[in-house]
Amino acid sequence: MSVKDVQAKAAQLEGKLGGKLFLGGNTPSAEDVKAFNDLLGADNGNIYRWVKTVASYSEAERKGWGAPVKVTAPALKPVAPAAAAPKEEKKAAAPAKAAPAPAADDDDVDLFGETTEEEQAALAAKKAKDADKKKEKKAVIAKSSILFDIKVWDETIDLEALAAKLKATEKPGLTWGQHKLVPVAFGVKKLQMLIVIEDDKVSGDDLEEMVMSYEDEVQSMDIVAWNKI
Image (tube, rainbow, N blue to C red; front, side, top):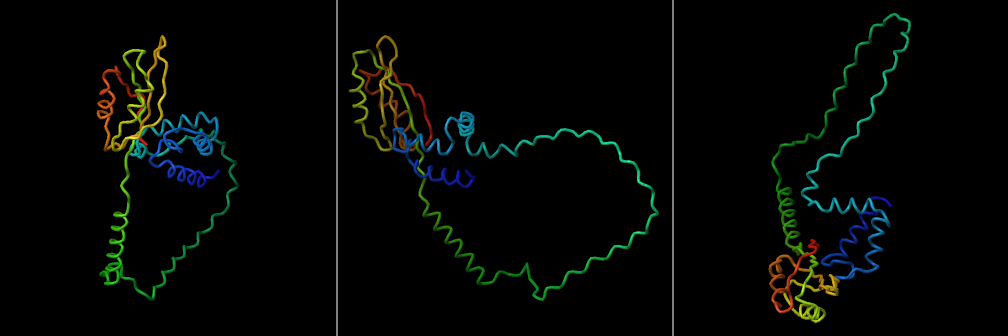
């Protein structure tokens, strides 16, 4: 697959993932596996590790990495000089011919002349067009996916009921995803939930305050993963 093919696939996938954690929304599916393997190939562990490592740096940090490392070629062994050729009678070098003078251009170009009215009008039109394009650009909404654990006071707490209560909570910029019950020990389980938030509308403090408001049931909450989308 050529570089252009990879770039085209990546651009198409970037558009499909706009505002979503997975291709189907907040839940992974076989469609995500196929797209992942189409782009990076199946079972390419070294590539996966490399992508994960490079992606952990910001765009600004990656731009400051500098030029690629050059591999120095091994030193060559000295070659014995060839036997000297029989001396020949030196010939006088012919005088170098003078380079022909460049032909004069019939149309003189004034590189430092004043800007004409037509050029000024074209420049003003370009500036106006660029300004319109900037206005038309849609503001990028920064989003994050958050995976967090909820521990309750004891095994008598109905975790499914608690998940339903939380998902019934509506807040601008908050989208509830899947949840599951994770065994801890001795039959005790914890509730693990996935959400997507708009960064400028929902903060970590907002999330904690919302979850911990169910104080009769919730003992504590912990952020497992917080990823920018």
